[in-house]
Length: 186
Image 1 (cartoon, rainbow, N blue to C red):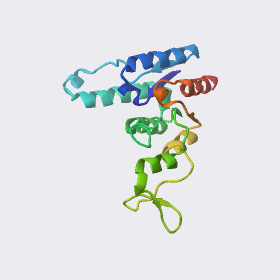
Image 2: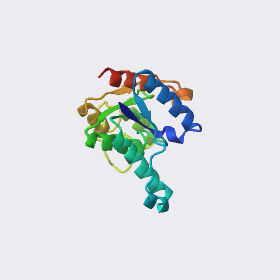
Image 3: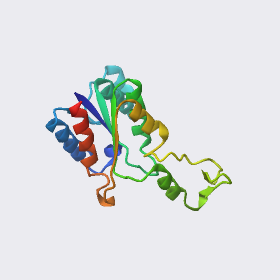
Image 4: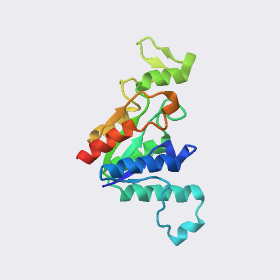
């Protein structure tokens, strides 16, 4: 089984190091990990594309070639998961592939969002949280936006949440390996 390894890991100081660790965990369980920066055949017409568009096409090709995705949904530069990773989760869900995710932050979406908003967050007359623009704060006790948790759940997947020390947030792979074990057991 080929597994697309989605997440903001590509932005780490050593993305290839984390990729190798993830691939090794996959291999130990009989799976093949595909990291977003892995080579993929480039069509001659793609040589003229802007780099960002070529990366997009390569990643989408990797996802089409994969049987499943395991997404690192640890909050990235804010209270929510990385936007590109969220796209990849939705894309794989739409393709009918297996979808699993993990987060190295256990807290629900609401407290993370309130922490991000700071003093701008307040409760309205009905007790619902609002931001400075009077927009409601989604409050369902989930790991992230309901579309992420819902999509993973409806795909028969799981979203593993663990609290790890801040210094290990991007390198701790216990949640990832939990997803790998679950996927391999299917």
